[in-house]
Image (cartoon, rainbow, N blue to C red; front, side):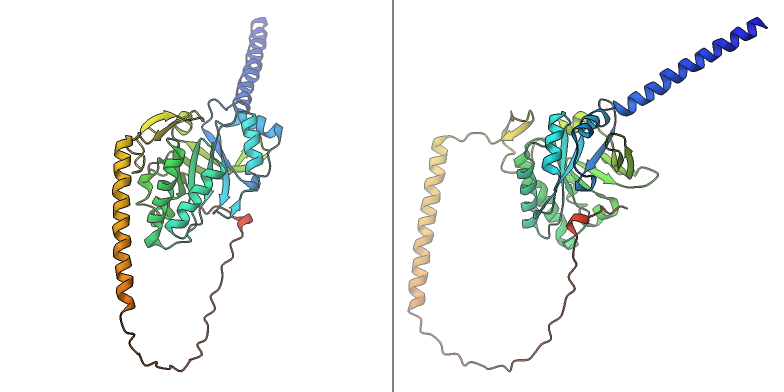
Length: 327
């Protein structure tokens, strides 16, 4: 009887110890998971402005964050500058993304440049292309132009492409290979098998640091992969033959190699001669045109027809109220 009682007391003590250490360990992991967590959040003005307390707690909850900088070129996220400053204060690394609205290769290049100039110190950059303002026939070229424009500006920092699977296959499948990685959006039970470096699996993950539900993604590469440098050489023609140098952000950039002064002078001289010969030819053409008699062409007066103007419905995008489309 005494032995049974002692055994009961001993089991109670072991159970109590297990509860104390076990729950304590789980709680510690949830609130201090910055070093080992593989879950990251992407934040925009929809999640509001961070406070000092939230930013401090966030540093213990995620390995890094991803901030929205802009919605197209014209609209800047209202919370980016404020939130970036607090993340810097509490040493939370961050990448940035641009919600793309480009409708041509030229506007894609402009959006990429604006993203860089608004966030020159980000650890990596993302083209969030999930709502088309461009035809399928031109979307791949524009999406490729986006990354080609950004590459020489950011050096060896990662450039990712974000979208859900069906949209990517329709509008950007050929351009995807130009990016360093694919951030896949798929709110499905099973993770898609297509290669990706990040999997955004939900928009309802509860963050204890922020006290709200947020978009969450799982890392499929190590934290250092996102915050480090690109392993492959930059392929942009302007810098592909350059050398690697450290920049002020601690990342590796590709910079063009120096060209000899003699070679530069020769190139300039040839260019000047070419330009001069073109001017002479152009002048002769103008001179010849002046001596041609003007032909008198009978003007045909067409009766003006009153065409009814077709009214096209304008689609108004509420910039402040955009929600990501999911597969």
